[in-house]
Image (cartoon, rainbow, N blue to C red):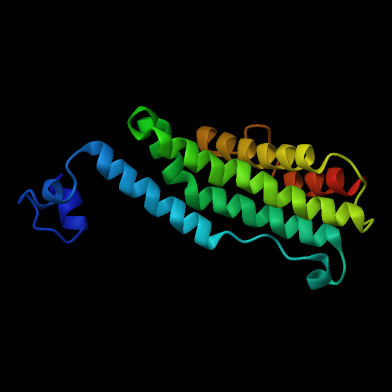
Length: 169
């Protein structure tokens, strides 16, 4: 605890931390709330095809690269939530809403727009967005868990394959 107080610029060993947070649950809640706000503020979708010379494949690849980078950045929060889920209550649901449901919703709207424009084949945009989200998340978690790509599939190969699947190649 003294290390946390020192890192937070509080007098180490003084109990300052406990005067600010009355319980472990409050500390965890504050951390999750801060990270949720940060993730929501920093949320960016990938570039539109017009920004990549009209090439939807480039726009998709850049979006997928950005999503994997975001997952790497959020991984400490994911680990915290996995360990402390029972102490977080509704925060876990809110985090799931932000990181999964809202992400799928935003991505599905973009995909539906590209489908309507004929840039990618028409299909269930929400299901496609969910598949993309879970493929990228599963890849990230596998690499983190094993310390390397357990199947030997590189990040570049994963992204290229996902782009091909979405673009109907």
